[in-house]
Image 1 (cartoon, rainbow, N blue to C red):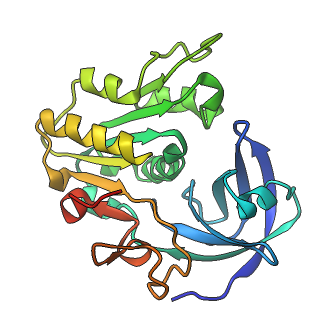
Image 2: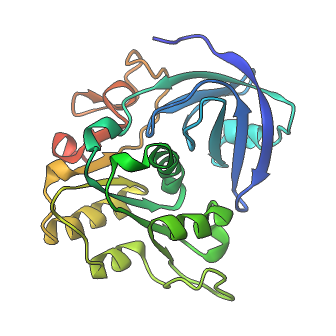
Length: 262
């Protein structure tokens, strides 16, 4: 178990949206898709953030401004140092999915951890079948990883949607909830695995749709959100129904957590 935070240099940082910033950090910490690290600033605090990359030389973190730590983080710049410890938790067991079609479904900031899965797939492409991506955002301005969408669209089956648009729609994508796009999609139910990350209400609706299409609970993997403070099962802040999200999750097969109230 890793307890001590160490300092690492920020290689680059830029805004993805008005309240989301992507940090590239020089480190060999390489979380498995779905794992997270604890990011801290001395005197301010610490926050758990999921990895948004799969790379042995640098770590990408999508930082959404939601509190004291993240507000302080976005004031850091290229060349500054940040404290990290980890990685922690169980991610998506990519080795168990070999030979299967993969369906990734993300909403808002939940797309960031799925980006790590895509980078993993890129490095192990022959291990998997068809790749279907369903990503939903509030508006075109809120779309994360804008420059990567064209690349993903050319390599995989990308379904991008926005809830609403008040002006231009540069992605020329459907306007509506990602769950509505998913409902209309024809998907392979046999030999497929689904990985979902996003707001709880979006995940709940997504699972109902998937079950109506014939998917079973053992094909579905979800990432739960809890305030993970210690990240090693000691403080109890993230315990729910006898499970510690920090060490038993944050990624769970759905049949293991079905019925847990998010």
